[in-house]
Image (cartoon, rainbow, N blue to C red; front, side, top):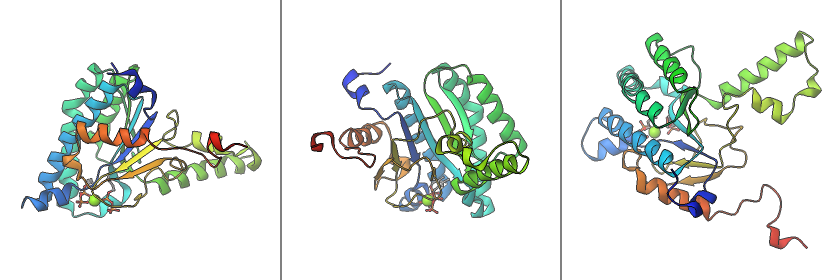
Length: 246
Ligand code: IPE
Ligand code: IPE
Ligand code: MG
């Protein structure tokens, strides 16, 4: 249950997080990068629990990008092992917290056993009505946008639709985030100030917060502090502030 209704009123409807800095967190401690990823999974748990506790409606976590396949095989394999562990162990807790989970991303490249776990998790939580939790896993926004464009091109070619009927709305519905509102708030940890192929179409009017904290150090307190930043933002969507209307 939300802890307080004033905080609830200024909550974003959809928070998306670029969880970055696991490797640097580990290096600073003289540990292998893999130790940073292990610690990063704990942050995922804490952030999801916090999101549930405050009554957030939608949360998207960037877990693995289409470009992350370029990393050394040993690191990719370790990350895949962590995803297996997470989906194996945590899906029940998600179900019990009334979380509805899904994956956005390319489902064609991941190992079959991971895909089955994902599908099981999605069906186990499909009827839940609390937090909508999306993991961006083998996700790349450019690939997502091109796939949507290709679908429209195919439909036009087959005479099933006119090019004019393609709108921002119908285009959004072909993206993998269909059913979720666009993210109001995108947070990136680790001090990098870039979007790294995340939700390019959907973040047209998102508020961004870039913070220095490395992902494994991002927990409940940092998440709540970030949400306070959001509450102080003035959003205009291309218009003018209401008091400025003459
Ligand atoms: C984020 O941490 C985790 C993934 C991208 C999977 P990084 O592994 O990118 O950590 P840094 O950026 O190298 O510190
Ligand atoms: C973005 O982080 C992807 C994820 C957090 C999953 P990266 O560490 O891969 O991004 P770059 O390479 O610094 O842009
Ligand atoms: Mg990184």
